[in-house]
Amino acid sequence: MVAPILIVGGGLAGLFCALKLAPHPVTILSTAPIGSGASSVWAQGGIAAALSDGDTPEKHTHDTVVAGAGISDEAQVLSMAQEARARIHDLLSYGVPFDRDLEGKLVQSREAAHSERRIVRVKGDMAGKAIMEALHNAVTAAPSIEVASGLTAQELVCVDGRVTGILVENKEGALITYSASAIVLATGGIGHLFEVTTNPVESRGLGLAIAARAGAVIADAEFVQFHPTAIDVGRDPAPLATEALRGEGATLLNGAGIRFMLPIHPDAELASRDIVARAVFAEIQAGHKAYLDCRDAIGAAFKDKFPTVYAICISAGIDPATDLIPIIPAEHYHMGGIATDGMGRTSLPGLWAAGEVASTGVHGANRLASNSLLEAIVFAARIGEDISALEFAQVRPGKLMRDAEPNKEVEGLEAELRHTMAQHVGVMRNREGLVSSLKKIAYVQKNAKTLSLQNMATSCLMIAAAALARHESRGGHFRTDYPLPVPGLAQRSHLTLAEAQKISEEALC
Ligand SMILES: Cc1cc2nc3c(=O)[nH]c(=O)nc-3n(C[C@H](O)[C@H](O)[C@H](O)COP(=O)(O)OP(=O)(O)OC[C@H]3O[C@@H](n4cnc5c(N)ncnc54)[C@H](O)[C@@H]3O)c2cc1C
Image 1 (cartoon, rainbow, N blue to C red):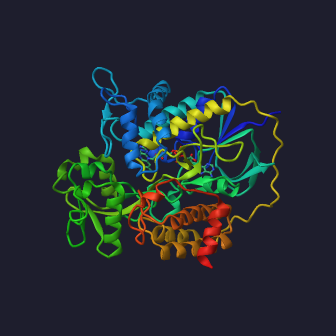
Image 2: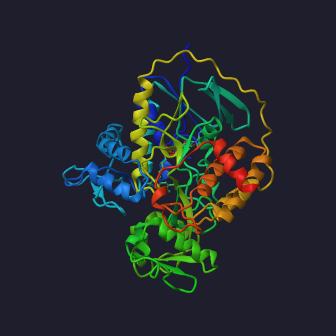
Image 3: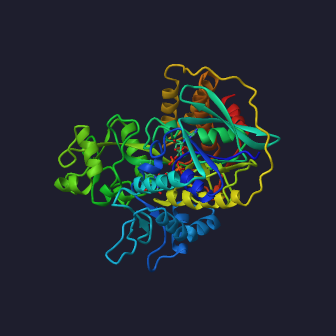
C-alpha cells in the first residue's frame, strides 16, 4: 500500500495545498485546530496581485525586488506575480468574499512601497480571517482531505536519504510516527523564538528545525522582519498597531516628547519598516521609551476608523484618542526558511515546503507588504501540481531509534532563549552579541528536556549563525559593526545545520 501525502500545518499554505492536491488523499496534521494558531488568520492587510488597469506583473516584480534589497530571485518573483491573478480566482472559487466596488470589480488598495493599488482585501482589515474561513469550509467539504489537530511535528524520518515519515507529539506528550509518500511542511514562521512577536504561539520555528536536523539546506535565515509598532502592554503575542495609523499622520515620540524619526529619515515615521524599527529599538535601549501619538492626527475618529486597535488599547486602559500608545518592535515575518526550488521542493527527496517556513527567494532581504499570502498560495499550488504528477513507489515505514523524551522543561530556559534572541539577534546585531547568543543557544541545546525546545534552539542556531556569517547590513539584517551593504555580498545565503554548528563552534572556541 502507498503511504499517504502528509501536510504539516493548517494555515493558508497547508489548506491551499491540500485543496490543490484533491482528489489525491491528503492528511493535514496541525498543532492548533484549523482556524486558530496560524498567522494566516491574523493577516489584516490582504494579498498583493497586479489586477488593476495600468498595473502589471512586471511592476509588481519591480517593487518586490526593490524591497528585497538586492537579493530577491527575480525570475521567481516574476513568475509569482504572473500567477497572482489565477490564484486570486482560485480563492474566489473557494468563496472568499473579497471587497468589490459598485460595478462588481475587485477593489484594490495601496500599501507602503507598492507603486500601484494592488492589494485585495476583505472588509478593510479582515482578509486573513475571511480567507481562512472560506478555505476551512472547502477543506471540510473535500472528501479527500482528513484533518488531525493537536499533533506537533518534531522530527523527520528518513530512509536511504529520502524523507519517508514524521514523528509527531500529541497533547499528552506521546510520540507517534506517520509514514508518508510525500511530506509538505507548512508550519509558518519563527516569531516565538523572540521575546516580542506579533505571531501566534505556534510559530516557533519547529518546521525549520526539523528540516535542518534532517539535513535540508536553509536559505536566508538571517533575514527577519521586525514590525516597529507592536503595542507594548505586556501581552504575548504583542498586538499590532497597524502602519495605517502612521499613514494617517500619527507620529512617534520618545519619553521626552521628542519626535525622534525627524532627524533619522526624510520620510520620518513613513520610512521603511526596518529603519523605523531600529529607531524605536534604539530609543527603548537608551531608556527613553517610545510611543505612537495618534491624538492630533486621528483623535476622536479612532474608534470608528481603527476599531480593532481601539479595542486592544481600551482593554489595556489606554484611550488612543487622548493617550499615547506605548510601542515596541516585534518579530513579524521570516524572509528565510527551508530552501525550495520553483516547485516548492526542498533539498531532501520526499520533502516540500510552502508558506512562511519556506524560502523561495522572492522576499530577498526584506518582504514587501502583502506578498507573503501571495507567495503561500502560489507555491502551495505548484506543490500540489508537482506531487500530483508523481507516481509513488511503495515506501517503507520509517523507524526512529530513540525513545520518547520526558515532557518536562528546565524552568525558564525558553524565556531565556527568547530574551537572548531579542537582545542579540533582533533589530540590531553585532559580533559580540551574536557570539553571546550562540553561547546561550548551545547551553539550551544541551539542557533542553523537550523536543520543542530542542527544535526552537536549532532554529535559533540557524538564524544566529547566518547573521554572524553575513558581514554587512542589508534589508532586515542590520549589523552595528558592519552598518553598510557590501555590493560583493549581495547574494542569498545557504546553510546546513552542520555548517551552522561549525560557525558556532569556531565563534565559541
Ligand atoms: C498580525 C499579522 C498580520 C499579517 N498581515 C499580513 C497581510 O496583511 N498580508 C500578508 O501577505 N501577510 C501578512 N502577514 C504574514 C502572513 O500572515 C504569514 O506569513 C502567512 O499567513 C503564513 O502562512 P503559513 O500557512 O505559512 O503559516 P501559518 O498561517 O502560521 O500556519 C502555520 C500552521 O502550522 C501549524 N504548526 C506550526 N508548527 C507545527 C508543527 N511543528 N507541527 C504541526 N503543525 C504545526 C500551526 O498550528 C498552523 O496551523 C501577517 C502576519 C501577522 C502575524
